Amino acid sequence: MTATLRPPYRILVGIMLAMLSLFWVNASQAQTAKPLPSYVIQEFGTPPPIPTGPLSPQTQAAVRTAFIDSMGQSAWTRDASLALLEIGASRDPRLAWIVSDLMRFSPDRRLNATLAETAARLLGIEAPRRNQWGVITDHLIAWDIPAYPGYLRAKRAIFTNAAPGWDRIFVEGDIDWRMVSWGGVLIDDRPFGTTDEPCNCIPAADNPAVTSAQEATWLKDDDIVFGVTVNGEHRAYPRRIMEVREMVNDTLGGRNLGIPYCTLCGAAQAYFTDGVQGGQRPVLRTSGLLIRSNKVMYDANTFSVFDTFLGKAVTGPLRGLQLQQASVVTTDWGTWKRSHPQTTVLAEALALGRDFDFRNGRDANGPIFPVGDVDPRLPVHEDVIGVLTASGKPVAFQRGAALIALRNGQQIGYENVRLRLDAGGIKAVDTNGSDLGSHQAFWFAWSQFHPGTALWPRS
Image (cartoon, rainbow, N blue to C red; front, side, top):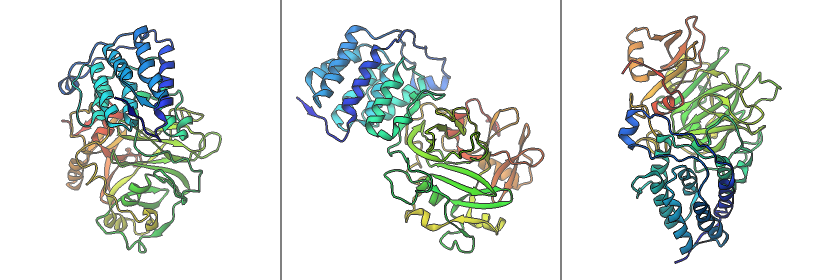
């Protein structure tokens, strides 16, 4: 039986051309898997043996038949199915990464099931029947299966065939490209100041319109806002707007800010984007990509990719740039405006008429994209306040417990960090009261980007 592969997924031809060139590169010595925590073995089992060196000639031939020849015909043929069996028989878990990448974009349900079976065989697990891409990718991440040399070249071909706007994104850098997946939306590549124009993307807002607290009659007192204070000037960013925009480039207290909100990991952050060497302000945008269910942001001027959670540029001309954070206080609108009556707030029109509540709807039952293993000390969606100490040690404070303790007059600290109540939320300051740039996030996100984080209270 011959299955026709449908457009507009131009991927299915271009992808495999890159895959073949991938296997021709020098793949002399792949890294071996690192020792895994016991909780990973308990949940995912023991990882398979990982070979080193190049693919065998037989496997290379199977790759040509299954992917190059069949994709050139825009059809998945019987010969391709037989070749895919040969690939699965190689038992090389490294190949499961590229199979997983293709699964994310495959438009054909039967082909996707076949790819899932192949990836499962490569990993030595039972083929999943539901959430196939997620299950395969979770195993790859949790087991830390290495990629082989040339993987980025193949992955770049897959993604740039899906969206040409990613061609300047997929470059070498301080980023683990294995972990990058598609979030289901396209890149926001509009120049600064054009964010009123519609796009087939998650639309950032530049220099957003604001109103006074008195004018914001559309907000209810129990609506969640993200409060930021810079040089004595206060502004509220309603979650309802941030769930639509996910990125704001703003100016507050005489400072430029880039404010990403990752709905998937419950984290709004505020980065100072002025004072950058060279003088050009980074214009932060949503790339449409994810790393372990955390959004990947980039600078629209240089196409430098930033680690959203850490605020560090990991590719491009800005590579190595570390953005400093201002604290973001997650609270309700009623308490914020009572505490800061002169606050401004983003204008209602920025919500574009939408009223999402991802936290209590789509994301209520845990991460919807693969995250691999999660530190088991807290539930995945536990809210924490995260901050770095003066020594560079990450520490997470359980938000619920911290709120109770602070309201009862208890002092909470860790090294130079002190927690204090602020407009119904929590922020971290140092022993002199200076802002340390804390923010709220889900535990799975904070702990995976800060492995080995200290935890208060200790569990």
